[in-house]
Amino acid sequence: MDYFEIRIHPVSEEKREILTSLLAEEQFESFVETKDELLAYIQINNYFREKVKQICGQFEVKFTEKRIPDQNWNAEWEKNFEPVLIAGKCYIRAPFHTPRPDYPFEIIIEPKMSFGTAHHETTAMMIEVMMQMDIRGKKVLDMGCGTGILAILACKMGASEVDAIDNNSWAFTNAMENMGKNSASAVTVTMGDIDAAGSGYNILLANINRNVLLCHIPEYSKHIQKGELLMSGFYEQDLTMIRQAAESNTFVFDRSITKNRWVAARFIK
Image (cartoon, rainbow, N blue to C red; front, side, top):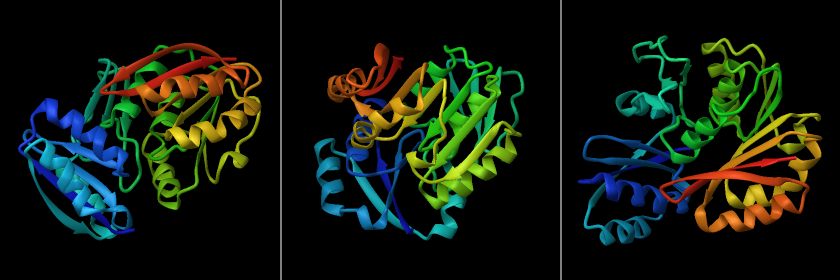
């Protein structure tokens, strides 16, 4: 699982947002923003230099590339990962950052190779919507949990039971580590797919991608007798498709929020 780090510069805030969206469509998994640069990470087998050259050419920016062996991945994050504050309430940091217990929710994430540090719009929006929900005493499923950040937040918000599931071995190991760092004792981490989920969930969280969501929405419905489904990982133009799939599986559309063309949508059953 070697990765390429693509360092794009100089990048204004406006260009950074569009570039992130375009690169995400090309299977880039993680992004780090610095003052004048955008760092993007992709598995080596998914990287096509000419495609990145074409995208950067549209915005008159330069890029450099560097191969990163998996054992050095966390060191790269330690150089560039900055804390994130969501809605003035949820502070996400790495273990080497200064603690901020003055915020209602503080989450410690050792990102490694897993998706979910709240730097990406989809994770940030999921967190923003979650903080507007009543999760106290609820049974929650975080499907495709990545770092486990959403499961940790659900635990901190008072969920009685949380299942975090991911089919990637790196994500499983990373999520387990992050549960320990956050004392998230209510969370059970499992390596597997939707088939590994239990039943009777009150809230199901899925920040994955459009195709996986469309495929699994019928399964999500089976795991929620009565409750809420919160999804992200797709663009504005995909909302109609996602909504139709959810509504055909007994969900009722509640609302959605958008950031830089990405969408988070909440459904009720």
